[in-house]
Image (cartoon, rainbow, N blue to C red; front, side):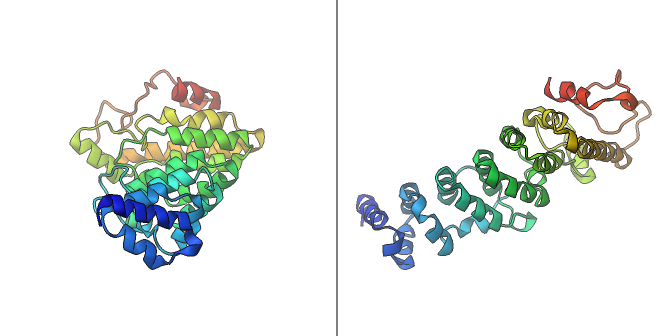
Length: 275
């Protein structure tokens, strides 16, 4: 069977719909070669999602990457999830919630596409996944990659607009994750910028903008979060070689020599992070 004939068979199977086919029917076709697998997930619509998940055809998103230090958008199953998430966001959000993310099964492509999906989800589904993002440490896991944070800005925007301030603080805690002493030591050894956060430019997330503009009821929680982050950053100095001419042992992107930290107000953070 050549590829044109194989595509025709897949079209016929898709036309029948998930209620009229067996697991073996699908498996036999999409396992012929990589092109068949890609074509099937390109043609399948949202009506197939529940059936595919139940029958294990999306299980690849649960597996650890062969090389977790690199990735590209090459998994048809993930491309499918991104596409159908616009039609059935509730089902896709539920699938994301069921996939455990950890060092043991880390796949950077999965986390990247999940973040992309989350940034486009309606707020009622997004707020349920924010705790997962923070608890499973998606941002630190993706630390070796060049994270820009635009998707997190979208999440903050949606949560803020809907008045989901508790979720704003939880997401802010995730975004403001501080690198470990070991990570910073490795970075210092290879001569890269020793940014204490995991984003190439934290300002793209607009995290401080949304914390400063938070409802009065949640301002104390926002301030406590920022103080704890500041304490964590300052505490990193002890693991680094002491230098007599420096107060802090970790470099930052901002010049703070003219700032009195004891008189700093929350509104100042808007300038320093989003200027």
